[in-house]
Amino acid sequence: MHTQRLTLTLTALASAGLLLTACGTESGAGSEGGSGGRSVKTELPITGVRWNVDSLTVGGKKYDAPAGAHLKIGKDGQAGGSYGCNHVGAKVSVRGDTLDFGETQMTNMACEDGRMKFEEDLSRALGKEKFTAKVDGDRMTLTTARGDRVDFTSKPAEPDAPLTGTKWTVNGIGDGKVTATLPKAVSGKVHLTFGKDGKVRGNLGCNDVTAKAEAKDGKVTFGTPASTRKMCPGDAMTTERKLLKLFDGKASYEVKQDVLTLTAADGTVIHANAAQKSDDKQKNDDKQKNDVK
Image (cartoon, rainbow, N blue to C red):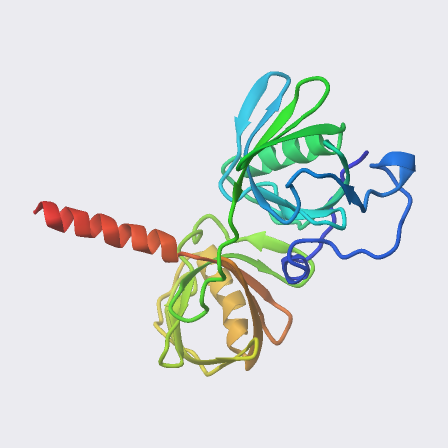
């Protein structure tokens, strides 16, 4: 079995609930009789559950998974999630306690901090051999005949973060085909917050920005942005110019748990994560410091 990386958009995978759509039966690698692996015949409680990847063990060496790595297997034999950086979709055949993954499709976003390496290792491991599954409560272990294994922990699905009132940290910009992470110079600094007063405020990489933003039925109508007028180094200004395209009339938006996808009128796609939890943690830390004083 071979892993194939395709330049799918995050929007397409997110709108499908991170699961690839399928109909009928196709022949290919990955299941009994050479079929593509689109059916599940098992009594194990593994489908419909978000399985967070805890670690990957290959050749006796254990690698801890980056935050956010997860897998969800559907009853139709389609699996989706993230291997640490990109969103993925894969065919999987489940027979009793045996899982056999077919080819994997991925978005084409680059990430730092070792996430790409873990993603490549996990993708290669899952597409190489059949796995025996063992489920014990909220834990699942997939093990090959040679002893390689992937450890998971289940987690209840979280509700979608609200568009309004959430600080959204922008982490990727694409053109509908390929999504790239933000340059290192502005990583973690670009953010937007939609207020209950019908305005959006934030920072575009260099300057602070404020604009009208009326959200309704999956669409946001933006007004002309007002911003500060600082000049910044190349990457910051380049990022800002791309993000300013969002303020050209109407944009569509979609929230899936803690991920926001905004698609501008010209096709520019912006991805952001909810920073609400980290903000709440900071508030609690500040409160504890004040209590000590």
